[in-house]
Image (cartoon, rainbow over all chains, first blue to last red; front, top):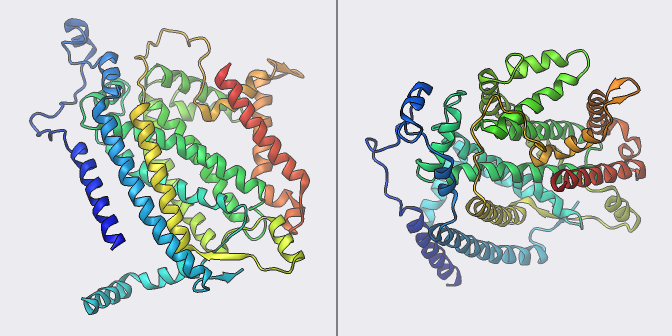
Amino acid sequence: MKRIFACLILCACAALFMTGFFSVPPVHAEEAAQMKTIPAKQIKKEGAAAAGIISREEVEKARAVTPERVYWLAGLWLVILVAAVLIRWQLRHDNKLYEEGYYSQEL
Amino acid sequence: MEEQKIQVKKALDERLLLGALIDLARKKLVPVHKHTIWYYMGALLLILFMIQMVTGPILLFYYKPAAETAYQSVAEIMVKVPYGWLIRSVHHWSSNLMIMIAFVHFFSTFLVKAYRRPREFTWFTGMIMFLLVLFLGYTGYTLPFDERAFFALNVGTDMPGAIPVVGQYVLQFLRGGAQVGMHTLNRFFALHVGVLPLALLVVLAIHIILVQMHGMSIPISIEKKAREEKKKIPGKPMFPHFVWHDAVNGLVLVGLLFTLAVYMPSELGAVIDYLKPAPVGVKPDWFFLWVYQILKWIPTYVLGIEGEVVGITGLAMVAAVIFCAPFVDWKSQHNERSPLFTAFAVVSLAVFLVCTAIGFFF
């Protein structure tokens, strides 16, 4: 009964975590970033922004820690915690068997 | 339902020999003593390597390995690719954690003399993998081809140039020419995604087979104590006990990895300016800081020989002694305590930690 309950909690946590993970809408092929080599002449002529060059400021913005990311991370740790508890329960059961001599051997 | 389960088990067992594998895992005993904690390092390394093998190919879909496009392709991974920042950061941090745990694994096996008979080849394969992992870290670090990577390429490929006799050939081979440029990036890309991972996979397979064959090494002090007290050393089965422990450790490691990726995502340095000189105080990545610091301390000339040559030759000789430890450490081979080699291991660890700390903070 305890294990069924724990599995249900694990599934609920995984679902919470997955909703955060998949909240970004999928990018369709025609909208996807077109990766291309931008010639130096074009950059000189049009300027970096117009030629589609990504600036360091944009990279720094992409690195920023946002509340969504923290929420997602918290969900992940919750899943890890529940999974670790379940595994520890199983280990305790296996250790009992070990102490009863079911597994133990000596080297 | 039970009958169906048994039938499925039988079918899988017949085709994949799963029963034989589980039987082997159950029969394999892991010694339980005060140094058992060090046995977990190998599994952690394996988990991190598997993470690298997943995140690396994903990055490969978007990375463009040419001097003109490498930097922008990494910027696009960070900004435009959904979760690109996360995949890149996980890849970056798992490589750092892998190198850190590789150092722990190396020093722990060195200190408990796990290289003694019959595990000499396990030691050799482990040392080869250690070097491969360090070079994977270095080559990966250079792929964004930003300012920091450019100077790392210059300094890193300069050092082998100081090797007597073959130095210049090695330098030319690594750089693809006399100077760092597009050919250098191409070669480092080939090394990072092809040559080094393939070599690592082959050596890893041999290493794992040897570990399964010989079992876990028990420290000499534990063996001696058990002999004196006429007691046997207890062992727990690999499966399920240690597999469960490895699973919990792996989960915590993954949590730590993603925490680092979210709070300290990978950086992208400035665009290369070929005309700009190296900034003052440019340093290598943390896992080579100890080499950098040791070479900094050596005078420009030592007995008429270039200091860099003396430094690199000296470090190479120490590495050779460590590699050949099974042959050099006679006492351990006869299962006797070896205080000289223990002192050597402790001094090596202290030098590594102190030099890394000094290189980092000063």
